[in-house]
Length: 124
Image 1 (cartoon, rainbow, N blue to C red):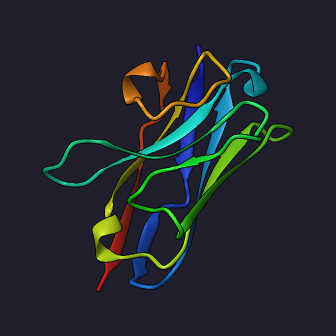
Image 2: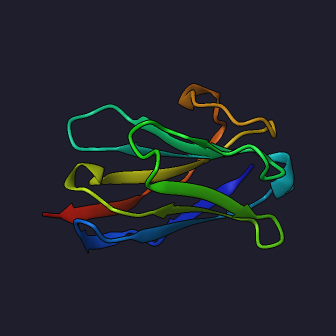
């Protein structure tokens, strides 16, 4: 079993930045691809970013491409999502997810473990 705890969400003005963190425990962290997804009110959960177990294969979703980066520190069992130039449409609950595989994918159904989520609210 893997436990994932997100942090770093909050209220920010449009144009601002946030860095989300996700601390993992319960499994060899570098064996797991990690992903970030988000769900806005009334919308389906969507892919934001993912990264391979060794951190060499980041993937960024179209909705945040050019404004966000994903990274990980395997020594700290933590994955990060840096978001810049935030827009009101980035408002959502952001979820961290882990796979049993080290290969990152965009499909949320292929992630095995999920955190509880952290709220990001961007005011205009």
